[in-house]
Length: 338
Image (cartoon, rainbow, N blue to C red; front, side, top):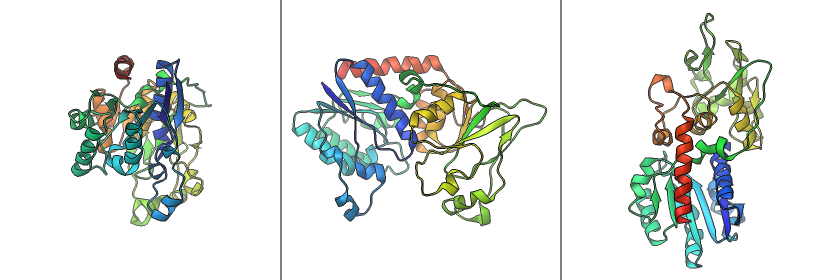
C-alpha cells in the first residue's frame, strides 16, 4: 500500500511539527507500506489570493497519487475550496483518504463553512476521521464514519521523532511571540528563575502603531539578552528572509528551515513562554513546562489532553503518561480503520 502523508501546508514552522510527527507515526505503524510525504494545496500553503497567481501555480497535489492520502491541520474551514477537487478525484477513482489531527476550531471558521464541510464529507466520506480537539469532533462525529475524538500530533513529537539536546553556556528558556512584541521579562533577584516566578510585562507598540507595523520597529527598542541568569532564546516561527530586521531584532534569535531543530531547541530549554499554540504544545510534549499567553479558539487542543491554560498565569505542566496513553489510543484507532 502506498500512503501519501501531507507535509507542506505550513503557514509557519509549527505546522511542520504535527505533520512530521504524523508522518513518522504512520511510517512506524505500516512498515511494509510505502509511506511518503506529499504536497497539500498550494493555495493553502502560500495563501494565494490572486486568481492569476493561482492559475500560474503548479498544484502538485492534483497530480500525486496513492492508495491512501492523509491530510491534517486546521483545514476544515477551507475544505471545499482547497481540498474539494482532489478529494472528489480520490473517491471517484476508488482510492481512499483520511483526516488525522484535523480541526475546525479557528478564528476564520464560521458556522456556515463548517456546515458546508459536513455536507461535503457526507457525500465524499474519509475512511477515518480523527480530530485534534473535541470541538471539532462534536461537530463532525455524525457526519462522517469512523470518527474519533483525537489529539493534535504535535503532542507526540518526542515519541515519534528522534530529538537531540544541547547545552549553552547558561541555562535558557524559549520565547516565541507573533501577536505582539515580546514582553519585558523580570524576576525577583532573590529567587532562582522558574516558569512560575517569571514576571511578564506587556509592551506598548512604538508610537501606538498597530502591531503589523510596529513589529518593523522592534529592532530600535531596548532588548534583553537574559533574565535571572537564564538566556532568552527567541524562536522565529515564520519562515521568510524578506524581513531579517524583524527576524534578528533580538539576541539569540533562532530561525531554521529544519523544523526538527526547533524542537531540539525546545527540548533543551527550561520552559517555553509564548502566544503560539504549538510552541507550548511541543514544550509539553518534550516534558517541559509551558506558559501560554493568548486567547484563541485553536487553544482547545490543550483542553483535549486536560491541560488548563486559563488559570495559573497560563502555566501548564507536562503529563507524559497522559500523552503516551493518548498515542496508544490514536494508534489503535488508526489500525482499526486503515
